[in-house]
Length: 225
Length: 302
Image (tube, rainbow over all chains, first blue to last red; front, side):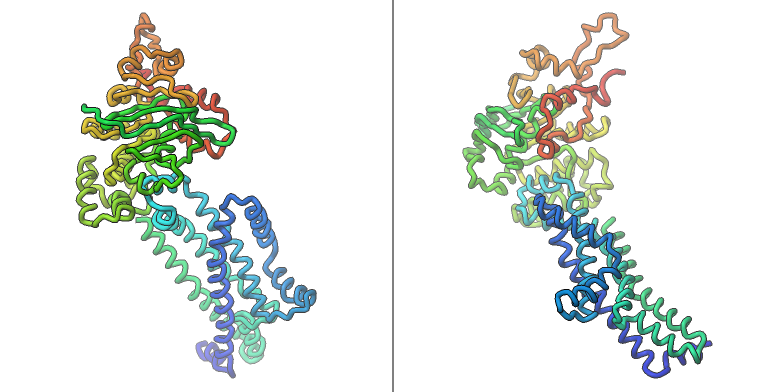
């Protein structure tokens, strides 16, 4: 059994290729998640602002991204837009772009929710103590908003990571795509190859996502006390 | 109690939310050590008045002079004024992510930049006085409503304010917790702290006030000594208002004889209506007032 498993990974550059695939997956995930969080905060604050124009247009953006399957967005940017405007975006650029567009919209909505759910009286009570606007944000609003934001952000992060295999359809050799290629090649000689390879991939996704959700539970518990 | 010199003077104060005029040329003077209790139906502008005094609401006209300083001056340094004007809110508004002690230290340490040891000593003094020093490391959600409100009072006192504003501080409390909060305020009044108290607790108003201010529809309708106000209000409007707190005893042979003050500690359920005023500027003041006259919760009828 073990031999059959090891042989799949030892064959040719299989293991190295899987690791390269993992690199692609991590690059898309990390960049898109980081950009989404960075861009989502100001977007969310704008969504919570009084500007009707900002609110309406961002709402439209959010709904558009929400109803659109990620796959459609990937195709739209990779095949259609490059033809239409005659720009050549690499599959990697398109992937990061699409995932960031999605993540930013969702993150913005999370930030909007966290900020608007804080009562206006929390601002008032901080100001009544003599705290400046910046001090109120820093000592009163942000710590509370961050706590409310955490579960949603963790959920979004793991969802984004889990959705990256879609880049397979625009021929980006991520972990999943490489895995499939390895199975196709090794499958002739090793009928259990798919079990080992996909099992391995499952394990890797677990190893990436599980610590994130443990961390979030830890933080939540610490903040709860 | 020694009543000293004038600390606060309000002249022709005007405030409106959109089309709705909330304060109509209101004039009032508060002296050192005086306890003013402001009563009146919901939506009459009581809370807005308090919020204008520490700049939480910008005013539309008139003057506010505090300790010789014009607060209506656009150059007013509100952070500095608010250190001298303590305010306690209906819903406590403690920071949920900070312990009772951290809440109390927030102002002295972050705003007044006092030394931690000095601020700590003051916090200990006040928290001990309200019997909450033992609970200093508790978070607000671990405290009862009455305890939270006492922490909120201490948080304001820790800044050494010259005047305290209490905005319906017992309105969200269960009836049995009202007392512990009012006792704290009563003791502060005895010690000569200047304060303006907005409340619906009529028995308390009678006990603590040096002057009762009765407001209706953005104006001061009566400004009188508590005994005079409760025994014989000068205006028909005030009489009608006081009747809300009085229930006829259906068993009494002569209901007309029932003492109004008996039922006065009725707690009225009033979800911070004034706070919503800004969000709903069109809301009719008269309708608000009518709501305020609704049946009292936890009222006196046995």
